[in-house]
Amino acid sequence: MDELLSVAEMHRADAQTIASGVPGVVLMEAAGAAVVRAVCARWAPHPTAVLCGPGNNGGDGFVIARLLLEAGWPVRLALLGTRSALRGDAALAADRWPGPIEAADPYILKGNPLVIDALFGAGLSRPLDGVAKTIVEAMAGRTVVAVDMPSGLHGDSGRVLGVAPQAALTVTFFRRKPGHVLLPGRSLCGEVVVADIGIPDRVLDGLAPQTLVNSPALWRRHFPWPRLDGHKYARGHAVVLGGGRMTGAARLASVAALRAGAGLVTVACPADVFPIYAAGSPSVIVEPLRSADEFAQILGDARKNAVLLGPGAGVGAETRAQVLAALAAGKACVLDADALTSFADSPDDLLDRLNSRCVLTPHEGEFTRLFGASVGLDSDKLSRTRAAASRSGAVVLLKGADTVVAAPDGRAVVNINAPPDLATAGSGDVLAGVVLGLIAQGMDSFEAACAAVWMHGEAAKLVGPGLISEDLPGALCGVLRALKG
Image (tube, rainbow, N blue to C red; front, side, top):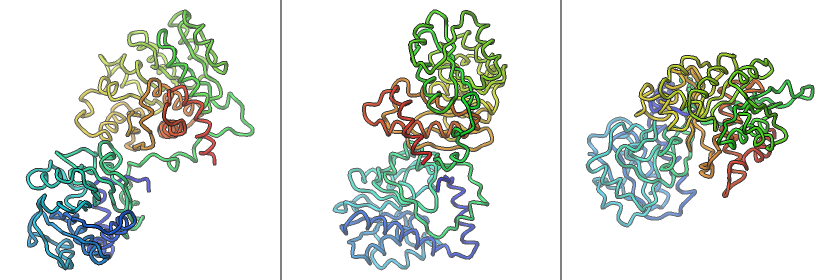
């Protein structure tokens, strides 16, 4: 169930199911029952306020209130709007509610520590105001169960539209939406349960969703495991450009590329810091660069098939020239950090030369410097990353706790396994190295980026609190062992 459906796609899934002969009220009853099962599995009966909105999310709330009442829970129900304004399935659900319908007002929360938020769900498109905003603000400090999506969260972006409650549990239906996994939505949803309400999986064939939660199911069968009849040259020869001052970045990346499976890794570094690199991992080849031409000579070796540029490289004309040389040599390229910022003043000089064998791994600042307003910086993270991949023709991996990886053809994943411990110096260099190691072995660039960011998160979870970036390459062994099964 890794597919993420936009609000529009979910409406289409509902409509197709209803058109196939399943009444909408049956889906509504199933949705309400799923929420009640989740609530009863976590809490004993106690006073509960069910807040219903004017649409189908509110209809779900009427079903939930009725079923909780039948299960012996003390329930009060409040409606935002009037009973006479309800239409369709929501009106049918309201007809089946045997208790009083109170006006939506914060007073109903008094003495009711559990709140069922069935006000708006994922379909909200404008900021909350008036009574709705006041009620949502009054939920603070109470245990909130959100139906589909906490009210005030945008279903497609995870953005807060004015105000939204902190839910302990969110029960959604059929598939998650992007707003469940993109920040800040993911933080506000609490535990997310995806309930089966009778929508058949075959509706996905018509929807052809392009957004998924990142998981091994997406790329495991293409993972480049070593072969019994293989050898190191068959597993690729990766090159990492080493900088002259921040030498740790390239060293972290090179070891990570080896751990990810690259057969050989060469660090090409300025001659005056050669001893620093040479004193590092004995598994890494070190080539001193005495002139810019020598880097081009290294790239002339056809066996060196993938290059990482940027970590610790320094911002300026020299890094720009080396990036352009790698692209001109036809190598698969991973571009990170300074390799991106070096083109901030003339981004088209880079973007017009990229291709689908390239992976860009910016954080938000680097992303903004390279792409600027051309990709709609006010749009949500998923849309921005997609637009950047389309503009550049490269795979774009926009880092963060909700890393998004997008391909030029529109495919995108959201990664959700990264712990906060990864917010430490050098962890991005390790990630870039893992991408490099997988691409060097011939893995597709999009799948390599997806696999790398997932492996990166799993390695961090294995290390746990106290993590520093140099812990990550070694932790990849445990991740790979578990992945291989």
